[in-house]
Length: 204
Image 1 (cartoon, one colour):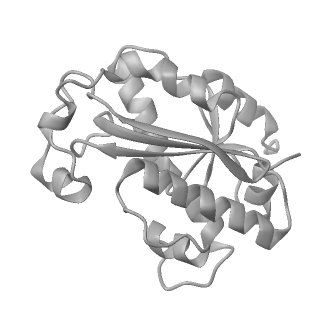
Image 2 (cartoon, rainbow, N blue to C red):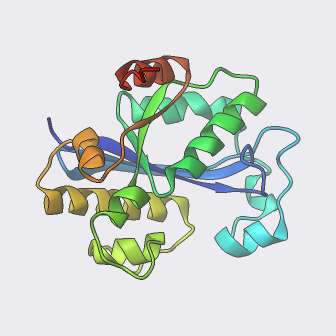
């Protein structure tokens, strides 16, 4: 199978996972970036307070998102871009948590998606003092990007996965995850059920 996936990164307005205020998406087909996009998000009501600390990290202000479309109005656009791809994120638990929490806070059903974590892949691919995104991306040959810009971070994540796949001589995200001692995760009812079916039975 070809190395196909969509890298994703979220920035948040505050310390609540539902407060997505920016997203970056990078589509990789057969190991090559073929499309990328990103936009600002107005978080769900009640989770839309912009903390000064978060603004210091990513540079997004309350004024930047006040006229942005709400998460509920943007989710379909995000899912259309992802299509049937496996999602990949650096420290994927955070980004999948944002996707889940923002969707639930908007009163919508969490979409069924599979995902892999480039942080876990990097730890089994490189020998580094740190596996933070800028350091792991540098090991993959992707340098001097605007860290905490959602699109730039998604591009860095994609670069890590493509480079790691070449290092391990694989062309499938699930196989890359397996070689790196992990497996694809899942969110949403259908994907979680499918993942549970693939787990080996535990005998009592």
